[in-house]
Every structure is written in C-alpha cells, then in structure tokens.
Image 1 (spheres, rainbow, N blue to C red):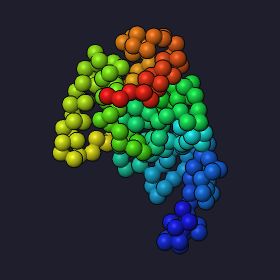
Image 2 (image 1 turned 180 degrees about the vertical axis):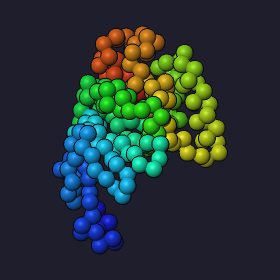
Image 3 (image 1 turned 60 degrees about the vertical axis):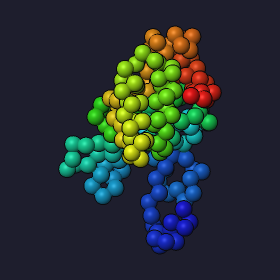
Image 4 (image 1 turned 90 degrees about the vertical axis):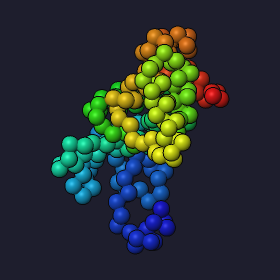
Length: 196
C-alpha cells in the first residue's frame, strides 16, 4: 500500500475496508454502509469468517441494470474461503443470509478462480446435481481454451455451490447431518481433505 501511495502520490487516496489491520485504512466500513466511487454506489457487506474483518462489496451504477458483488475470499464460484478466523455459523450467515439475498442476476466476482477444482468437489459431494455436471463440463472447456470462468451469478451459485446448498438432501446424506450449520462445517471439512 505504501508503494501504491508513492506511485500515485495518493496521500489522500480513499482506502475502504472492514478491518483495522489493513495498511493505510482511512475509511472503515460496517455492514450495509454505502459509499460512492464515481457514479457507482457501493454497499459494504460484512462477511467475517475467512478473516474477522472481511467485507464483500455490492456495486450498482445508476446508468446500468447490471450489478456486481466483489466477494474476495468469502464466496468463490462453487466454493468458499476457509474458516481461518471464523465459524461455520458465520459462513452460513454470509452465504445463505447475506449474499443469497442479493438479486439473482448479480454477477459474482471472487478474489480467486478455483472454479474447476471447486466443481470437482461439488460433483463429489452432490453427484446427482445436473447443474454441477453441466457447469463442470463448461469449466473444463474453458480450461482447455485458457479462458476465464469468472463471473458467475448469485442464481447460479444457489444451484451449484455446495456451501449454499446445505439444505440439499443429497449433501446432508453425504455428510451425515441435517442441521444447516453442522452441514456447513462438515462440507468444509470434506472440502479441506478432498483430493479429487
């Protein structure tokens, strides 16, 4: 960040975030706090778990019907970040109560592109999910052509992401639990040890 400030002579740069540990942070934002960048309206969505101060950013523009969410290390395509500083209950809230309530057509831009490996796991944990099968075939073709698999949409994540499908009977049977928080914890454990 110091290098950024030096290059851009950006002593007055606006640095937004949800955690005081962020170097040069000068705009700490809270859940559902809004700010603007140019004409874009940005809503901070507090999503602690991967890190305590993690924020996702929901972005809209007055001249566009498109909307995006920058999910960092919380939501990946067909996956989610590890629970380094949080719990299964927090990640369940983040994915299934905060992000899942965004409009279905919201474009999802994660911080990392783990799509193919996440879909391999999703197929393992929910083999009967045809949406996962189709998305995995598509991601495989993208890999062959060296094309990106980002973005996804909130609607698609609800169909393919095992961390957003904790109420799926097939996933619950696979992990041996029905309590949604326990299912989240067990799906995370299974993903951590998956070598497919």
